Length: 166
Image 1 (tube, rainbow, N blue to C red):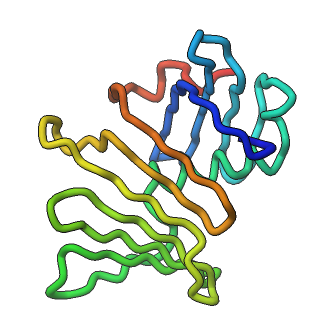
Image 2: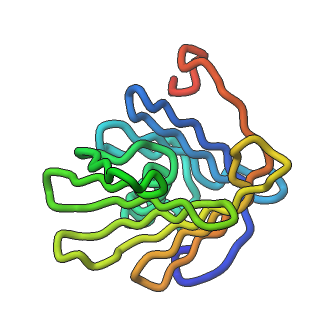
């Protein structure tokens, strides 16, 4: 959380991979909306927010993390022949995204800057009782920041249902 605190929240996240639009609603455990915002084409818009969650750096970081976890990486996919457990994407700015399957299940996703320094890492743990749905996700960035997510449920929705109307 901004200011270095820790807090347990619930969220609803809607992602449209076709348009790369994202909507995130963060709620307190009691159900109070703390943040509601949308991102499209790199532009972030806060629909409503408590003051401490409206800092532009927090908003940019939140959408960067959600996009990293839920959208296909931008750039050209480098398919490594003979290694189906590892994929690398190179974007035009020199950034690299790697996804590697882990022994025993799960995946690790890494993001590197043009200097090849790791800036972000996400580990997805898979629950064998669910169909390829990550049940625990940890995002760590170079700065002191960790985001732990536990999947409660998910569903596919039709993007024409007005979820991006505001």
